Length: 375
Figure 1 (tube, rainbow, N blue to C red):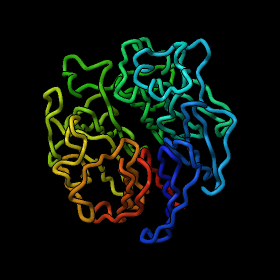
Figure 2 (figure 1 turned 30 degrees about the vertical axis):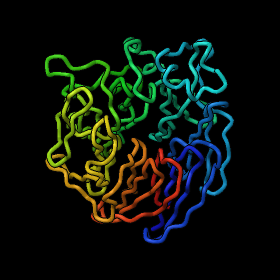
Figure 3 (figure 1 turned 90 degrees about the horizontal axis):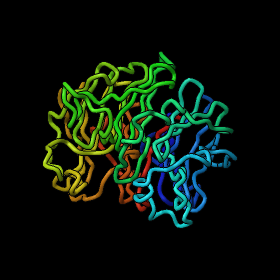
């Protein structure tokens, strides 16, 4: 069994491969392009999204992860679409060309790529969804999501408005989920025509008044074959749903709980991923939104089977570590392999569901995304 990791950074992508998950080789591709996400379709083609403060976003494809070709098309807003002023303020530091000054929408980042049921999906800033049904040759907006009536109340997170999580149901092509920072989690049951917020039970929502917007979801993971069971890493804690997101409960037994800047106590972090073969779920907690580094400097990945109890997996990980792991930088190869990269450019891997870890690569730029593919 061979594994290929596509590791996105602001300066390109490291394609790291191994035949035994012990010895790894590395090639740095798409040099100079900030690589934000990747996905593989059902024919084995890999897509990598890139962005430039001068030229906007683009997509590259490869059938062997060695030779890459830029697609002519990418998600784009219509000229008449108006942008969110607060989002523009937050991302203006990257707007070297002054593109946002006119007030229009501009796709400044593809946050995630997702392939399901023969279609390629992209979640972008400012929290829009696009779909391609011809392998990225053309893109269409999913207006049912993009034109929601309550969109005017959405508030950007620290990185702006980003649609960063897309999940699908392997048995029902009409059902999908999308996570947006900082607007919350949404589900469609009619193929994208309408979308409903799914935040009941997530603080500060209460049983009698579930939030319709404003939840800062960081990531959500599940098994598409058992799609109704979801695990959610929120700014304000870790949650589980067993009914497709209709209701959520806190599952933080064994996780480090910290005090946030607003006084709320929870387990804070960004990424989450599931190993579907074993059903294990992994998160990487940080010491709150004030510090955003591992508790006590001990880098740790926590694992659970059902959410009842989390166990820290630290064997092989550094004990004097004050970096972070970003929302897209944790992946599973679905063969008991788990991988994550840090904001300081080090990549770690485990071939035994986190029981032991080893350093795969170091000296990389800030790692923003990691995806694992069996080749």
